[in-house]
Length: 425
Image: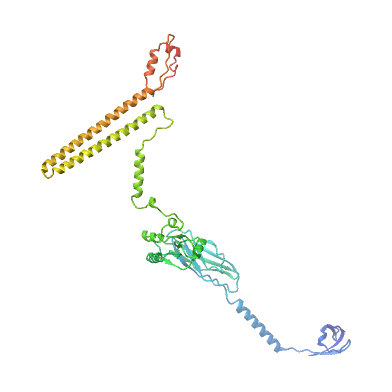
């Protein structure tokens, strides 16, 4: 199509062209011949280029396909969760690296028994977590929920049951500095109980066993709050057939000495001797007790001590006499067996009589001590105040009050509506 246009105003950048029907068209000056001026007539041939249109359409489609294949074909994949290790009170979970495709991460949350337990702090770099404080021999269900800009994706549910106290397969040990002989025995004990030894301190390490508190692995175990115990803990677990507490087996714990021997019967013997000593010691009278009660208690204690001394002397005498009798009877044993039996019988009768005499003597002595104690109490009893008449003589009523027991309370004057003077007269 050929079009004739009249050049109007010519500018450096844009030239104004006039159509035959007096329309204005702005046309780039660079596309016009260089020698044109205002009033010049130019012919412009206009035609459609279908080949160029097809090429442009092809290029646009290819661009769209590349964008879809790069950003729209892939989507985030659900997390893959599994159990790495389980003990009596803890579970270690791990999962594959998170695949987000072209989406952006919002959060990664852990759920326990259908309830949210918390968000994973660094889900792109952290692929394991440890859940502690669980109940023994209890079943739990865990799953992950991934939230992205492309949608929400949940992992499959993983069911884990914590171990019983007798199941030692969950123990994971990292060893520190150990003598060669101790290390060999520890390895054998770990194999026997079904536990395992790993190299280096990891998230599933349950105990760090060493005999010296130094080294890089020891420092890492302290940073992760992993119990640092002595090799005796593994031996104790194997001996008892169950997992034991680590309080007594800490590396820096005080070792159990002979005074705290846990052998059966030792503690009972010590307790029994303490009880005997306590029972043998006489109980002192209270500080605020009357003088008469203190004197009574002192006299009773002395009488008991004298009785024990008498019994001890009688026992020693009986032992000496019995020993002499036995030696005599053994000397005569070769002569006549019948005489030996008679001698033994007489000795037993004599020993019984001596015991009876010693017992009666002890009772008589105790009775004498009790009489002395009563006399001392009467002597130490404060005198009752007497009421004298006008002539200075003591009345018969006052003498009767003096003869009463000190345990009975005296009636106050006037208690029977009698005056003090009436009682005196």
